[in-house]
Length: 253
Image (cartoon, rainbow, N blue to C red):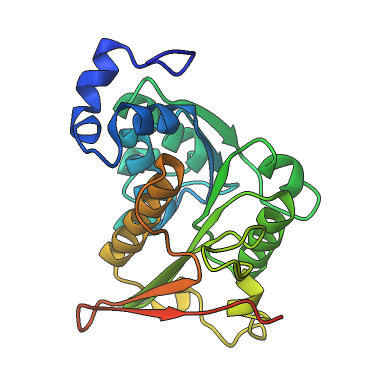
């Protein structure tokens, strides 16, 4: 192992269960250490994403969130604690990451993603994970990641069900076809008020752990270069029946 991403002995021990896997090995772990990942949201989805990315040894993690911890968050946002109420989510999440893995660098972006800052922010990272809870941010993240040319792992949850997919519309699949974009899957956001928020409809806390953990898994696959990421496939989970289903989607034009 050579170069600036060389693993020291403590890292070799920490990541031993990764390194012993032929699909990852030392080279894959070095790729994880070299990676810069931006996570949108330090809430229900972002919490498990951040924990597992940090545990996996991602070299630098950026966190985008303009919110503060509230008591009602703690039913699902497992990176925060009762004593963190009213603290900035990015601040508390950064502390948790450093406590878990001091080898991981953290960038705190206490702001709301918008059309004025999205592109400059995305260009600082190699991959983006969207754990936001609103359609405006989801479409902005998808459009920006496509324009910048970096992978996006996007997920959504509601009540008892969730979904996720991996977007790389700037490249082609093994068949030579251009990969689909988010708008190929969901051409337009639904009208305002049609889809209730989690605050209005409710949500099972553990559901965000299921989908967030799957988002982290997809990001690790993309970065380390193993397995088949969910490109052109939407994975759906129904917690009431404990069923997973996958649908394929393609570029529309």
